[in-house]
Length: 488
Image (cartoon, rainbow, N blue to C red; front, side):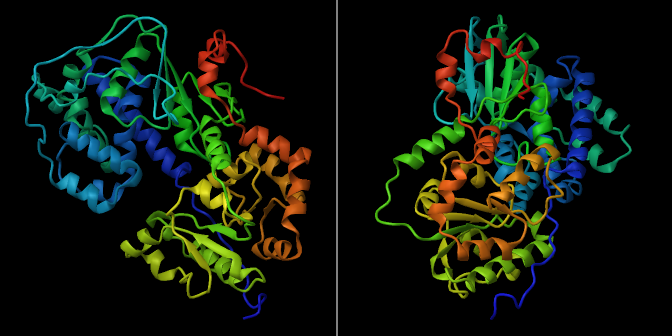
């Protein structure tokens, strides 16, 4: 097959964090927050959004399934934990089991214990890379209590509010709010004793995945604590619409980014996660000269698999690489085990990589090892976290961005100059033609010394040592609410 015998398909990438999805999330979360404020008379919109985020986003993710179940409220903590796990990685079958088997899994009754948050200046970290901050000193016994004070009337009060909602799906969300936020809310809320929270700050990396920590943070914030949310990967600041970013920015006092600032709440310090990645990358040793080109395929989820042009585009990339002069050095990184297990429509459409003669890297080693063992990383879609990881360690990388319509205007202004130094392409053909004619080592030396590259790296892939900053008296977090977030 000649390399020019096929034409690059027109592809319109779907944004799972985009406007339509985000609008349903924002409306549903606000309705749920106000409903619980009404029946409990405690907290405010911000604290209830912190408490209800994972529940609402899970319900929306599995909207078709959730909207059709009978009225069976999520029960108790073990099932709540099951649901929260499913928020990021669960399958429809797993959610179905949870919804269809709502029963109490908590059998032991332990004497109540009050959880006391000490007064003073403390910084607590949730899901931050490494053990950088103190974990919230939770009393684990509270986690396994069968609440003694169940207020059944709260559910009937909530049902009255649900009956006022004309939208069937949003009504279903209100009806199925977990019991820990309805019947058992007062029990857990009252067992968290906050003396003086003014000196406490919480540093949260992505979302909180423990309902009791959500309670602690919400109650402390209500009493003067500060909340810092952290960018945890790519797409933040790159996509025009990103409802998770909007949510985290809304609930936080400041949102710590990897170097960019579009909003007064954005704090452009850099990434401790990228610093950890950089340290691991530098410590990993390779033997001999590396010549392979690493092609990481995006995870083909069901929500993306609906787009046939996206699958066609990925197949086009694979076929074009299989017909390139460096085809024997191409190694495709993708989750073969997932595609083999899930009999999805995407699986039947993706070309067999090995039949094309390309090698496979199926996630058996961490990404920093795969990157370090490659001469260059070629990314078929953009944005991506791996692109920023490569930039943070100055590893040769090229990204193909076939659809720029989803990008934030600020990001697009910084990305366009990258095209002039051949770091980003919109055409697969042009990217591979460039590689076939280019000495990667010489080209990359030119790239990393350019002002264009340095400016982009400082804005979107800068590193930050959080531990040192927190140990420094009078540091950035002591002044964070007074300084301006905007850079020139």
